[in-house]
Each structure stands twice: as C-alpha cells, then as structure tokens.
Length: 283
Ligand code: SF4
Picture 1: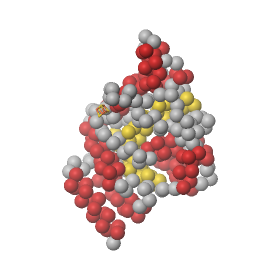
Picture 2: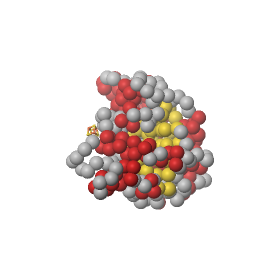
Picture 3: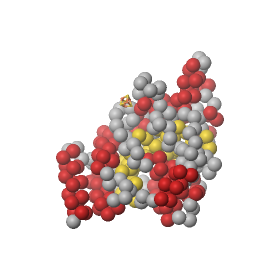
Picture 4: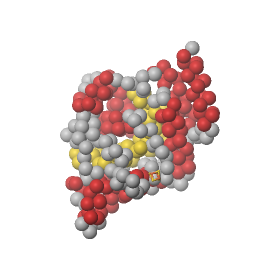
C-alpha cells in the first residue's frame, strides 16, 4: 500500500489538493482511503457532498465512556464511502483545552491499523491530509511512526506557506534518517501570483533537493466544486482543472523519489532567496 502524506500550512488548500488527488487516483482504478489528520475534521467534506463525517476519536471516546476499548469500535462507524467510491476517515481532535492534537491523530491512525481497516477495504493508496503549521512532536508523529512514507509539501507564493513548507522539510530531514519516510515533492496551490510562483517554487524545490511535481492554478472551477461538495474530476470531468488533477495523480503514482531534504536552516537565507526572486519578478 502506498502511504502518501500531504503537509502544508493551514488554509493553503491541503484538503482541496488531497480530495481532488484522491478522486483522480480513484478514477485511475486505485482503491483510495483519504484520512483527514486535522482536528478541524473538514478534510473529507469535498468528497462527502459538503458534510462532516464522524471522527475516529469521537467514537473512541464513546467506547471509553461505556467502559470498552478501541477493539469495540465497528469500522462502519469510522470509515465511510463517498458517493464517488472513495473511503473516508477523519481522525478528529482532542477536547478543546485538553490533550495533544498530534497524539490524538496518532491514536486514530493506530486504531485504523489495529482494526485492519486498510486490508478490510483492500486499500492500495492511503492519503493523509496533515496540518503542518506547527511541526511539533505531535504533528510529526505520522512520519515518525511510519504512517506517512511519501511526503508532499503544499505551498503557494505566500511567504508564510513557504516558511511552513521549509519547516516541515526540516522535520522530515530529522525524522527520515530513522526510517523509510522521505520527501517526495512540492505541489504549488496558486494564490494567483502565477509568474512569481513559476519562478520561485521550482527553485525552492531544487534547493530542498526534491521534485516540483505540479502547479495547480487558482480557479473558479475548483472553487465551485468545493462549494458543491464534489471533486473536480466528478463535477467538471472535461475541464482543464480535472486534467491537472489527473496529471498530479499520474505524477505521484510514477514518482519514486523519496529524499532526505536539504532545507534552509537560516531564516535570513530563506527571506533573501524569496525577496531576490520577488524583486526580479516585479521588474
Ligand atoms: S505536541 Fe503539538 S499537537 Fe501536541 S500539544 Fe504540543 S503543540 Fe499541540
């Protein structure tokens, strides 16, 4: 089974990219499970007609409340199937103010493993959509514990998204040395400044030692699909945008690059690289 993790800053479009990727992989014939690893539990909404699905941690808490353990959980109460045929899971989060969100995500992933969810549904590609604002010990657990083997970073031309991507690459550099995980590439989810993004993000990927995999433009079609709670390949199958997600799915399936990245450790160097490209682009 391929285990692909999509990391990026909150609000950068991880759910948009991962949902549309899941749908395109499903269209290619893969049996896909998308696992939302963000306490907001909204990763799978685009695939679930805009609805929130119940989270693993909620069900786990309910079992604990009645004196049972995770083995009492019925997979039917935590794994759902989208109308298009993609398996959906939301890890969920801790009660506000209590507990560690990252550890909660790990508990949810461990429950899926213990209940043999992947083999039960014959999953051949698992997509993990992971919050990457803080690359703390908690949110790096999917990498550390071997759930996330191929890691993709999502960023746009906004500096904060690049800063977050570089930080995630630093975590991958540290953790990849211990196991099989590696950085597989960078995906740009455009914020609209396309000329700058085309100049900077491939150069940033090269600096990190990883492939630049796909450019996803800002698009009213993608926004309409999100509002309609349907992925692009289902909602607008003949659109240019659907072709972009099919290309992304194909590129990811064919990509066997897993590197220990070479991130920029000095924030001043990252800022200088960014500013120099920005100045060149605006001339
Ligand atoms: S490790 Fe991360 S997720 Fe866990 S409590 Fe600390 S900041 Fe939150």
